[in-house]
Length: 433
Image (cartoon, rainbow, N blue to C red; front, side, top):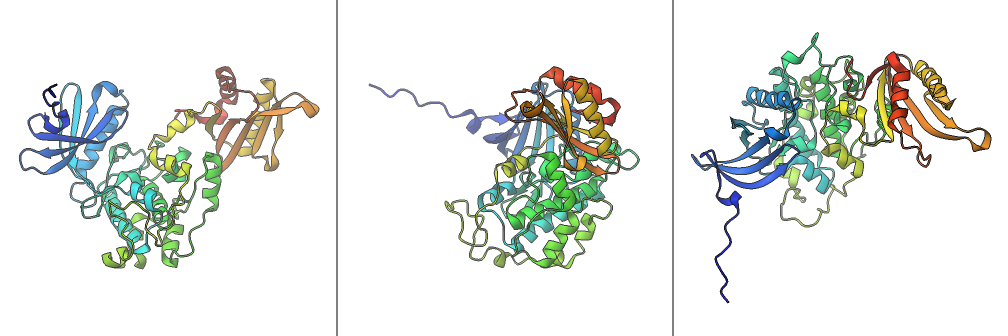
């Protein structure tokens, strides 16, 4: 029996894009875009091409795409910012041709190996801070600095990428930004307050989280409960490994300052002696090759075992508009911000709950309210509203259905609570002050 003709080669191995690029394998994909490796037909240079399907995007995405392109074009002169070569478009697609970072995401390195030697962490941190200062001097705030938006090239040098959530000068109102965006575990606390923030100071906070992750192998604030996480942030409640040097600890402490007015700026970081120390590439990798692609086992050195838990991975992987946190996918939780003191919010929650047929009970310290059904020993709390006062007259709240209560947070219950609280609440779901 004959074997028949050989199968045709895969399209990616032979297809060309608009007569200019030979398409290769897919490097990644999202809900409306795919990224491919490709090669220029003109000079055979390797590139990455982001293909955005216009038919899968909605109107709100268009300004983000244009902003990403505009920001990257402004920042072409810095060696640690991913370069954009050209942008092409058809009726159905947008093609963004970019520099190819063959070393992959810094996130993958950290997730695989845990903490890095301090000299190597400093090298990446130096490149990140240098790139961000250039961004800020060019009028661009990144607003989504996290390890998977930090790529590595073939030489192991860092490249800042993904400017889809970046802010340009024309977005400022009275010199400040007002859109809540970023990735929760890396986003500065003031971004949630909706009273205006300095984008460069928000990026500085993210740098502090990045430096902590590089040196500790896990996130400083990793609670899946947003209110609990912000309580830790306000207390600077984190534990850094004892092996980390005092100068590095001091920089982390000054960057993870919940008050943006006293927080260390990106420019000030560059003046620190620890930051200015020369890079010894040999000592950074002696005895522990963190970047051997063929390595099957974790190196037996100070890198240790990664301390990341499931929330760390989710937090670092899910870049999103933080306003979306106010419309949580989990139907058992809802979040809001309020513009009065916490005790006033608690009082109002109690009043609304009683009108809805619940019995209200204040928790210790007055920062939570339980709404229950029944009486005496048969009474059971089914809803809990927890609050944290993040600034004078500004409260972050979370409404949760108690596990095992049998309540599924029906839409009518949610709407009754939302309507009852009225003007006390600054924002629900996607609302903006």
